[in-house]
Length: 383
Image: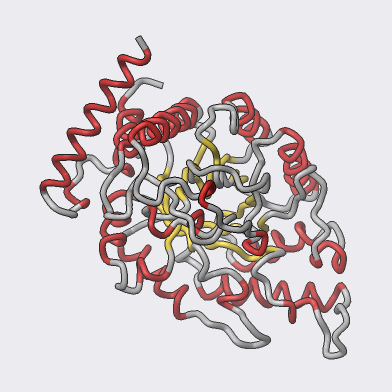
């Protein structure tokens, strides 16, 4: 019975996709949009690269304007881009991103203020080449947060204040932030962020928070902040490179993440979603692009297109995940996809550079995939 129902959904999606293809690439004509379908549940977002907002990728911009209610800065607000050297701020790309969001009346998310990766080494070093002391690093952190958040005060709605501070075992990652400042670097970052813009939402964001051990590490972070009366509004589970297998992650583990943080009185978010359909190169869920594996044919099997069978699996997996999200819509404030369409997904270059990946709802020709239509249909079913 389930197979029959899924087949009917797939046929419906195929017919709609064919109709859209016949009409050209005008994805803006799709009705209704994702943001409309889920408007009573949670914000639907996408991470944007600079080409989407600077006019170089107008088809992607059209998709975003039509389909999404929230946007996240994919790279342009990371420290190495926006603050590459002492006293040197590169605001132009971030300005374009923010103006795009304001123009389209979107919920704007800044990503990210404090992270161990994509952070220039000068931040942690003195003129003698040695590590700076605690007070110097705290001053640099505060200056960065106040300068960046101050520029976009009243425009950016929420910030990933601290990103990926936990190791996979749930203990604090031994980053320079930790070893120089100490465990309260997270507390200080949130204090500075609240001072810089008291009206902006403040988030902790990390990958693999669906894993119970790491989830408990993030619970400890939130409890520590709350015990010290330091504001935190939500916790983001990235959902990066989740698999087609319904056990990767399982419904139980996703539900555990949601329940763990809603019990603390903070909202849950899924902030960087994409589903990896390609073979695993190695078991690494992080975002360190230095950890690339070597390209081999067996790791890149779909160069000429995604087989129909895998398209159906992807559609089913997205529907399964969005069903869970809708069931918990009172506890979830936002679901964001990491990218707009397959051609610009980070999974084309991580963990293996040069692969052809298919993790999102729109294909390389800017057309909605069967997964898009199953997500739309999921919004119409009773949770």
